[in-house]
Length: 189
Image (cartoon, rainbow, N blue to C red; front, side, top):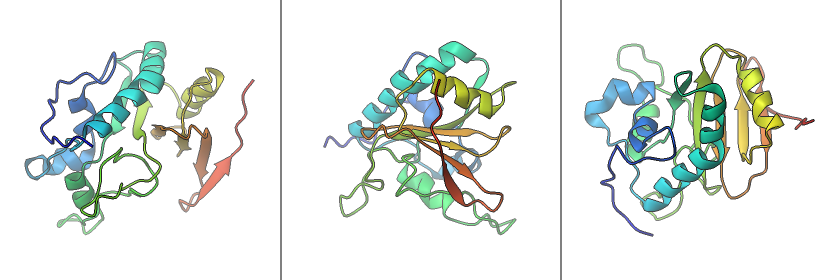
């Protein structure tokens, strides 16, 4: 494992997005930017983000257009994770809902004991396509038979969560109104 921690924000991850795009797109990062190192600490994480872009985001962006695709949550650094787990001092609300053990946003980052935050490995992002319902984007992903690991569908007007990793289990998850996950069937033509 190569440790660095000083990756360049302009590093291309694919045809359309840079490391900076992925590491600084979340609302929590933007709110606390002065206090957060948003970048990966390992080359493994950068490589996982490149694979996510190559296999999933590049084809999606080619189809829908770069001007329409908006990243809403990309890479989660250990610093960002700390802020997501805290409450906003003004509102008292938690900054974010995360599950680093499952959601793959932390890619191949490791904790202080040297264990991966997420054993599933790979990388994930959340995104919207302006003017297109997330149900239509999801159907295009399925019709195109892209090799995703997990896809979370939160609703037509909400971002999609998409991950790429070694498992490529093509699991689709929907959520009840109370936020409980339920696995949806994989229906492709």
